[in-house]
Image (cartoon, rainbow, N blue to C red; front, side, top):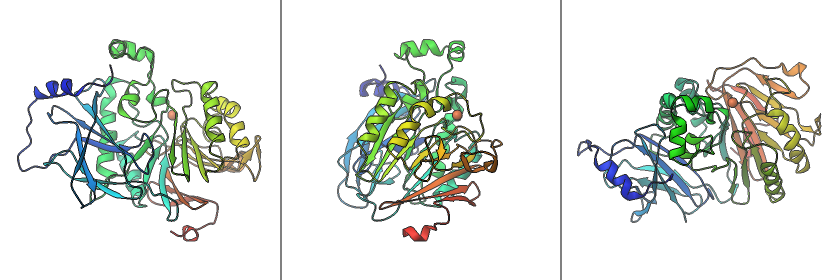
Length: 417
Ligand SMILES: [Fe+2]
C-alpha cells in the first residue's frame, strides 16, 4: 500500500507536537513542483513535513485575484525517514498564467506559472545531469541557471547520490534543501523540475539486504522494484521509469530509462518508436536519458551505451531527431551531427554529459575523437531556448562563463531574446 489514506495521516500526525508560533507563517521543510500531465494546464505540487498535523490541501488562485480554490491530495512515506511526502495535482489551469498557492490561511504564499500556449515568446529550459555530489556545487549551478530565468529545470538522473541507502537520506534532504533555497525567486515563484532515473537512483540489492531494506520493500509491496526512493519522491515518470511530457503542440520531452530497473531493449524501445512516430509534426522533440549514446569519458563499449546505440540510435536516425540530451560521464560534451554512426549534417546532435554538481572527469579530447565536436571537464548546465521552430543551446559553466553554443555562432539576439 503506497498511498496512505487521509485518516491514517491525520492519526499519525496528531501524535506529534505542532510547535509553530502563532505569528509565524507556515512553511514546509521541502517544496517542489513538477508535472504528471499537460504543463499548460496542470501543476503537481510536492511538499514534505515532519510531525505536523495539517490537512493535505493546496489553496490556489490566479495571482492576486479572486477567491481561493482548494484541491486535496495524498500522502506517502519518505522511505526510512520521519518525513512524509504530500502531493497535490492542480488541473484545469489556464496556459501562460501566474498562480499563487498556499497550504492554509496561515501559510507562506508561493507562485508558479503554467507553460505558454505557443512559442511566440522564447521558452527557456535549464538542463543537466548528475546533480548533487556536494550541495555547494548544486547550489552554485542552480543559482547561475536561475540568472537566466528558466521556465523549468530538467535533471537527467543521478540526482542526490543517495544510492537507495537509508544511511544516505541526508543527501536527499540536502537535494531538497538546495531546491528550496535556490530555485525559488525572491517573490516566491517556484521553478518546476523534471527528473529521471540514473544509476544512483537504483537500489543495489546486497546493500539493501544488509540494511534491512528488503524487509521494508516487502512490507510496502516493493519486492519487485528497485528504485524505491525515486518512485516515492517523484510523481513522474512513474514505473517503469519512462514517459513523455507534451507541451501543447510545440515541445515533447521523451524521458527514457537507461537500464535502471527497465531494460533498454524490448518494450521500452517499442514504446520509443511509437512516441517518435506520433510526434513527427512537433517542432521540438527531445529524447533525454542518463547513460550516454556517445560517452565523453567512459569507453566506447561501456555498459548501457552499447545498448542505446544498438536499439535507440537507429530510431533517432529514422525520425530525424535533432537533439538528444544525456549525462552520466561528469563532463561537458557535444557531438558532431551523427547519422548511421557517421558524421552527417542531417544527423542528430547528442549533448551532455552530466556535470551539474559533481566532481568533473577527464574527457576524450574532441580533436582526437571522431564523434566529439566539443568536450570539456567542467561543471555546467545547458540553456535551451525555443522560439517558433528555432532552437538555441547555450552552455554555461558553474561560474556563469559561456563554454559552448549550438548552433555555433548564433547569438541569442537572433532568436528574439
Ligand atoms: Fe550515472
